Length: 365
View 1 (tube, rainbow, N blue to C red):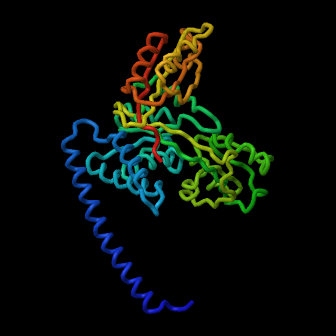
View 2 (view 1 turned 60 degrees about the vertical axis):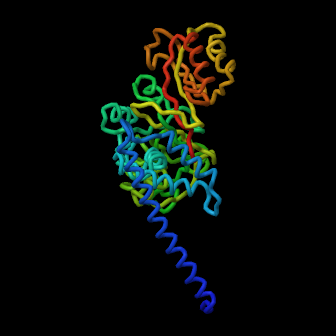
């Protein structure tokens, strides 16, 4: 390949000098921002972390980004900057469904950045307990998947726990088949979480129908087990493949290309309005004709958009003694928005039971 001519060399030198100048400016501005964050931290009372403020900043970055970097890339950079600045104000611990390498850990890092301490928990119950006991300031739990639906245990615990939802994370889920075996024919067992096995059901039927599938506590645990067995495979994310040094034999084997899991952030405090929010609640009504229509009518009357409706057997919480079902409802808007507040006030008059799970910013990025 020909050497660049002298004009090209001069232009490269000039452009690199401009980059060096910009890098110096960036360093100065980053630290100036960090100093302001420290000053704000000394003025705040109580919780330093403000989910609604971070959501507003990230939305503004996306809306005002001129390119050429895509909005998602700029948001990731700003998220990491905010994460590092927050660590100067208030060190955080985030509980998630472990072990390391799970999608829950990926969701925690997407929402909080890499600065907080990550606390891996063995079960969803343990995530709630860690936050309730103060061993973590926040927790991340999955609540629904676009392919397989609601995560029942998370919904049941949201009903019984005093914790509030203060944020949400939407994470695209791409499953990888990883193994030390040389081919599919050499695999004797496939390990994964039950939800992931279900999300790859058709692919497995087409390509590995005769291989036994074993459900385990998490995808990361599946990867750990597969790493120890030369004729075993795991279905998990790329992070688990890297963590356990497992080659990926087949990539993106999920049945639905748009496969996505929604996580919620749980904490002991409420969240103020960000301007683009969601309110989650759970309620119940006596079992009689037209009861659900009667219950939900205030939402339509106030022009409040319902984003989600999920029913669960009441016995999961009340032993089935009072109601047959409880209804999990997500609506667009914050509980302090006039229309949402009016609808909730009327709903409380109609329902046998209402619990607000939280109002929080809708997922950003």
